[in-house]
Image: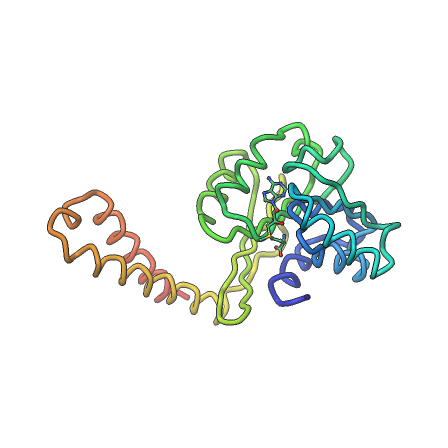
Length: 215
Ligand SMILES: C[S@@+](CC[C@H](N)C(=O)[O-])C[C@H]1O[C@@H](n2cnc3c(N)ncnc32)[C@H](O)[C@@H]1O
């Protein structure tokens, strides 16, 4: 099913790309990449047989077996060097995404674009990208009230950057509200209030409130 999260991922994929969709599950992203013409070739991989079988079924139903190759395997190990120019990893935790990227430097060396949609720990993903000299930008997409971060990274800086939007404000407001709840909960314990974590979260709250004023 195509929703604004998948559309936002696809928007970052250059025309006529050779794409890997790692952790393809049902294969919706891979299928949309092929059907939209964004990708001329797609590797749709999954570590688990069940999801891969679901992807294979959907790929066959869409008649796209000549464009999409389904492969079983862990992370980027399913790819040969230089086989794709764009790698998408969506719907996984940020720590797992970093683990997958860090495990295959030789594959990354030959890849031009990374499009990552972590379900959490997006700052960890951005920190890893920066530490590995990759420029990155983040877009937001909302589906059923949940706001997703889609991070596009490359060795050269992007010519356009995503504009600040009402969705960006809503996302910051959601983060502020979550943080306020955590701090209120911690405030009930004298020991918790004295921890470095409490001070760190308070500082983060101030930073977010400032950034909301500037949006
Ligand atoms: C929640 S689904 C996300 C599906 C799809 N990418 C999306 O964003 O809608 C995560 C998928 O990643 C697969 N997965 C988890 N760890 C993986 C790994 N190390 N390598 C490849 N696939 C993995 C899981 O089996 C599952 O099908």
